[in-house]
Image: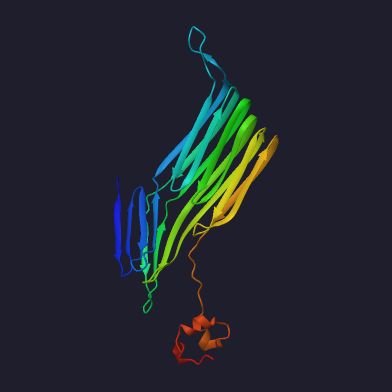
Length: 299
């Protein structure tokens, strides 16, 4: 059953639209005063996907005509999976040689919950806060082994999780053996835009997610390993790039995690009247006004 909902708010400084369906939603803010703009688009589905397979054999020439015409030996394979910006991509190409591989992939994705839009502007303030809350979880687990001996093999993979990236490339290898495990999890997302009548002040995308990438390899060509982690505004906070040329045994495990929660710290609003103001933040006291709470004297 398809489901759709449209949420619209017309403000002095922005046209704000959010649409949701079983597979996608879009939200954004356009400020008509200075032309600043920020938008987000998300797409997913409720689905289940499982794959298991193995390959073993010789990549060898094949005679295709009685006259002796030979088809050059070649192997290629690719995989592409994506749900709600949780991604896995794999590419393999190999020339004549002995090749074997095994692979397991499991993907679970849900896109049933409504995406909630809220916006608020405190009395007397010109600051708007617009928030989208998404609960479309995704889990992706994948394992793969490759063993090859021959003329040359290129084997590359890439795992992405809402801006965080990790992967490896093995190029021009005469010998390659590798074992890789990937575990990607997305729990929820919160997108928050703060804007005034004049401009968009900030835009943050808070995702609760984790990425684990584990690899063990033996290679005789070029090996590139890389990872990248971003913050709520998409700015780079961690980066790693390494290249090995020659014969290497490499073991690497990368773990990245982001957890965002909405927590409100409660204060004792009777502290002024009971014990004075010495243990309170001056900014909080100022919000009560000059008289204070219940006309108690704070100095």
